Image (cartoon, rainbow, N blue to C red):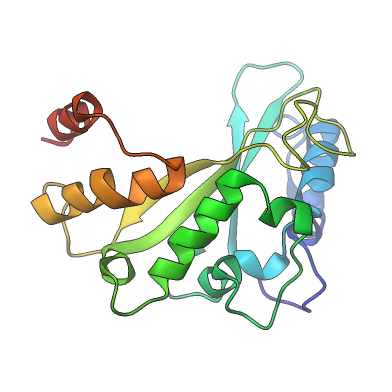
Length: 192
């Protein structure tokens, strides 16, 4: 998604709204997504995805944003772009602050993060009781995103260096604390 600096992710959602089948994405769900994503700059992502919970009535929909290393969104997330558009309250939330830290490392050519991470996905779980004014838990204007990391192509999932980087650096940066040895063992076992 690219456009004027003052556009938000909500503008992209509104642009595709007429093409979303109501059996998968109900109008109220789109309204909640729009309300919650007005605080995110549109230049953050070039790709949106909708997660539809099949069988739910009314349909329940979440939103995923891809931030890719080769696109301007990583610079926006890192705060290294002339495009800002961030709502200050989002940038001060602890999880978002840690994502900014990861993105800053990602844009540093001397950091392993810049070559090991191809993309990250931010999934925003939109609850039925999310209000237009913010998230009902008091965590700020957005729900805490689920974060998914995509290792760079050519570095297979069994590559020991990638696994060590994911469990030793990337995930702890996002969580704000190291993983326990038991969790590292479980991740290693799952990957192998």
